[in-house]
Length: 461
Image (cartoon, rainbow, N blue to C red):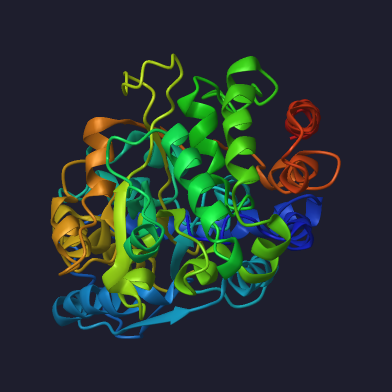
């Protein structure tokens, strides 16, 4: 989730791993914290079904998140919990890289917030090293929380060793964003929910050709943001990156290569990657320098509040016309989905209140409010309809409709996704194809090289 959020610096993760249990001394220290918190969890299960958070302490709960777009809405929900619990909640927004650096520092003995977000890139490492509070005893005693109510991929993501370490906060889907004014200017038909990626390619070709003098391109692809672009084409063409066993690699297989071949074609009529790297797709789009991008539901507010929002429209993520029949058949329209988890620090001074706040955020009531306020879609199926109506004047129903008209796949991950997610996008792998999209052979070789990198990394997990 989140543009530029999917890649965490390797150095940060290396430091975290050193602090989180590669050595015997770190293991021993963390075990002590774990035992203490297990005791707290056991005593805290009595009378917790109301999520009141009344624990005999009024010390504020500290919460860290990384998305400023969600701050106001989440603080509103937290304040409602405070009205019942009497415990203040201080939500802090920390920039993505700094967010994980601070958590790493806390894992090695520094300060760590009481409650915070977890992400699929890093969850397994935190869960395995006694940094997160196990929530099972709380959940068992809480009538408002049933793990079966959430998207299963998200619930599974935040469990390890038979224990649940975070509750699903939300889920996200991907849609196509386009600038109606640019399409009108160059007399090109605007996207619809019936478009395939071939249609995207054709329209991008026309706009890029017509817009040469103006420096305008038909499409801009942030290849570093896998979830909102090229992952979807791999899976739409019947391939996979990492299978559901989180070990088997598929990017070198024919189906995945077919998806990446369409990615290559689109790149040939898109903003050059040298420009994208310097400026970013969102800035290019808001500067009227490209006509289309794909983006995740977590970024709606950034475009809803932008100066040119009146020209911005959303369409369902295009389908992959695998058999060339110009009809969206089952399995051809896919969207990656991911979900954050609300977690608590294993050494929080008030585990009862920390869980109570998490449970309030993740209850059906809290999830519904999250959707109604336009914060994000819910972590529960069937609770996000209100989200489509949260942005007056902008139709964002494409994010909801893709769940009805398409197939969702959970963002692929392994035990230590960071070990391969960055290397496969660098020179010697996919970067070669990103920078030289004119040659199909370069893309095919890049996929093979990426497969070898992934297989080696996963074998070493």
